[in-house]
Image (cartoon, rainbow, N blue to C red; front, side, top):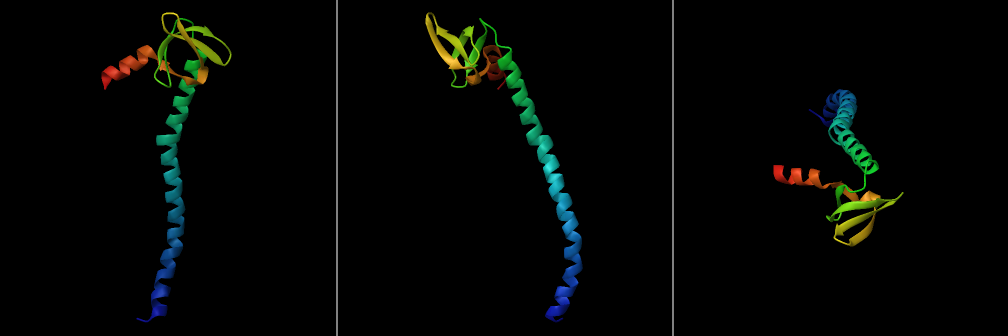
Length: 109
């Protein structure tokens, strides 16, 4: 076989695989959406709803791992009591989870 015959035999195969490549790329995007993007968006909504529902005297954990009880809630920050008569002001976005939820997750591991 000469070189021209090899190129002619490969040409039809390359044309058909272009459509398969697009189908494969679309399938990969759909799989990534359902297994990665959608669950992450759902988790972000749950965290946002949790932060909106914060209440005074609720036990929480900050993103830095500080456990405390909410004593006052403002628009963008929270006064957190971490020990008796020890209060700190933190940003609402740094509140990570409820202490009870974190304790139950620790016990299941």
